Length: 71
Image (cartoon, rainbow, N blue to C red; front, side, top):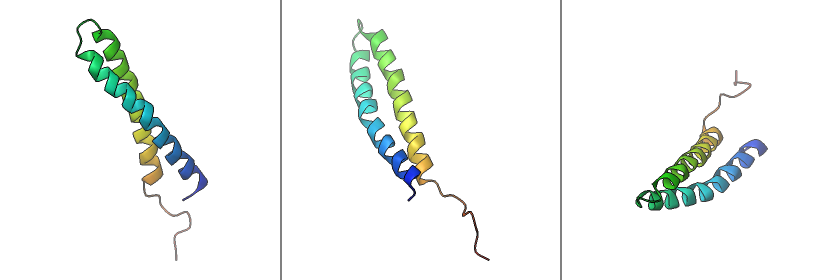
């Protein structure tokens, strides 16, 4: 793995914790009628964080074409 892939993996793992917390509290608050608007905002933030984490995981683990293919 290259240095950029390791950094991407570390940031992807770090984004999972806040994304999961926003998702947990967003679902919990969405079930309450008075806090529905706040729950929806938290769910949007969770989707952004978890989507960014998924994008970083995809970038780290995708197969790349070799720069100099063997002859």
